[in-house]
Image (cartoon, rainbow, N blue to C red; front, side):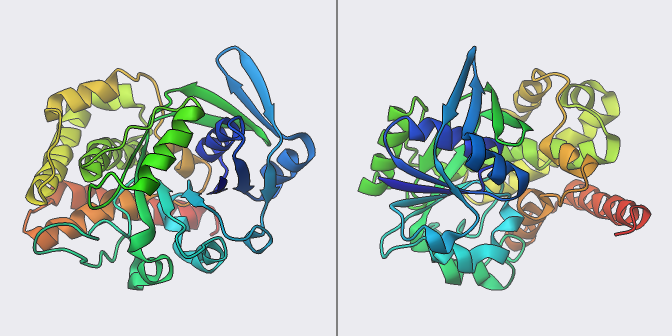
Length: 327
């Protein structure tokens, strides 16, 4: 089976190293020093007490790879639109695109029962560029739970977790999604096939849409935000709004909001990925994680004042920071 992972950072590298052990023909699309290190020395995965080195094909040129059986996107959501032309080079007539990404993505309303079926979500896909180029028929949803980090070029450390939930937008147990789950399982990855993948997307998003932007404003860890009285009140207000938007779309959330907050607090003194990106001057995942929620709120008639306020404050802070950095 030919599998290309586009965006071989921490999660993509972990996934690629594990899949390579199954005998799959794995290709990693990467760039910069990370790519050069993997080409030279292989991809090193530190997992448990082991140090594994995977010799996998690595490139920055999708044209040299050709059509794949599966393409797994492990890029940040905002990075997809600029590279859709390159992505198309990896697609055969039936190649699925597995979106191993956070947030509300470009295909979300595809085959969604109800009045908003096939609605275009501007925050997730400005101008509909991704929808047209990749086509929603190819999409397989994927919710990522492992925690990993790149500790040096070509070296990925697995911290915890090995669950990648997968599911078709229409909830079917199709041959292509069951085959994907099977190969992930062969790699030692937990990959349940979900018939309501949007429920899983929103459950994770409740944390990402709230803790992440607040962390940019405060510089606080998950534990600090969830135990500070004011921080917790703000997180609760934002999460309540996001849950109301999800419920209006027919999502069934598996956990009460207070318990969702407690689950994040138990992670401890952890900086969110958005805070880490902010500190390193990288683009933030504001559109897929926050702006998409507020846009859907307007669509379905659910007010999101707390989310709107925090989103605007983060944009202001980002603009001020970019000016101070001379960007």
